[in-house]
Image (cartoon, rainbow, N blue to C red; front, side):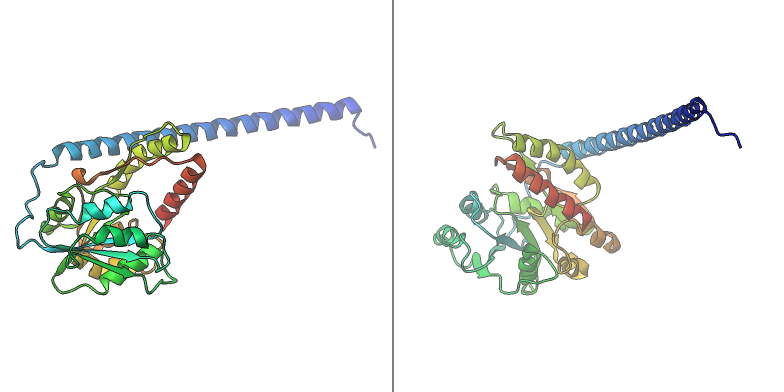
Length: 302
């Protein structure tokens, strides 16, 4: 039996290596083309969403809120607090100086030992106790996040006259007509939720701050396109809460990304209020920025 000569074996190996190289090159070209097409699609989609977002802002009526009458629907503003945010005192002061005539502020603190307690006590001491109610989170649910537990604590104790809850984050410093602007769209029977957005405005050139700013530019039009509210400046009509949203909150870590799945079966829509887009000037390190982005991606997966 004849055995292949060494030079024949070498030629065969070279032949197979060339075939493997050509196959790998072809697969790489196909993969590169697919990635390029996908990126172009995402870019075009983002540009379309951004154009719609900007058009919606420019076409939004600039008239002051019409819900300033004494018979305006009663709103419950909910501020869930954990930790001492640097803007907390200013946030509370702004919420207690709203022009809207019919509302109450309910501050739900994570625990009696929370470092925010002295700040909150000092901020509310100069205001009427009829306008603000401070309480502690007494039922931290295992099936949802702490903020959702606080929201559910408020929802389950609403009074008959309460027509909506308005959720605000402790880093928001609200302008005087903020509450009226968010309550106004809820008078439309087609609107179940109204929302502003968070807009990061870099006050420094720190890398993490700039990365979050760029991320924000792309995320806001996408949230509007998918009817996702910003949970830090948002109003929910009561029938939406009772129509399934409160139940979804009891099963999720976050409160905002589940909203579209509740609004659609109810035949309701989300309305973006451009004036309620809240600026945030905080700086952030790159490490904390990546933690923030991970939370946002986890939120989107809920």
